[in-house]
Length: 193
Image (cartoon, rainbow, N blue to C red):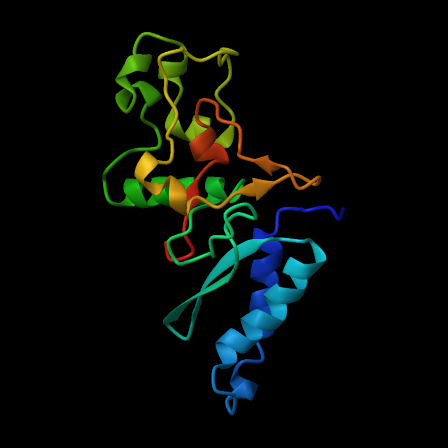
């Protein structure tokens, strides 16, 4: 069995490199799809990836291209609505959204976590600043967070759209959940998002 590394960044780089030649391929009927196909299909074959979706923007135009199946068991095809676990790329989304929220005055990175999670008021974790939380520099953070903090889960109504992950042995797996796992590595999103 071949190793199945995190493919998101690799696929992004391959597609970006392939798209650099899109202008030269103007005679093709759909040069963007062709470039993405050429970059993605060999990666999927090499690493035995059952399905993926690619969302890109070229020249201000958005494209979403779907490949394979969301689950080898159900054989349901990947669609624009398929939810994928994006792993550590979640941190980039979280940081970008937090920065955007600060610019728009919706939060301040110097705020304490307890301002947004009132259940943390009066705890050491509640005194940690958002910037310190995001940069892993809180100092004195307790090893365990309060039990009443909950995770963000995929709603039951969207579970049919949730792509299945697989181990190196082709066994189904989902990301493990823990406090703040959704923000750190557990964002589930579609290529359309």
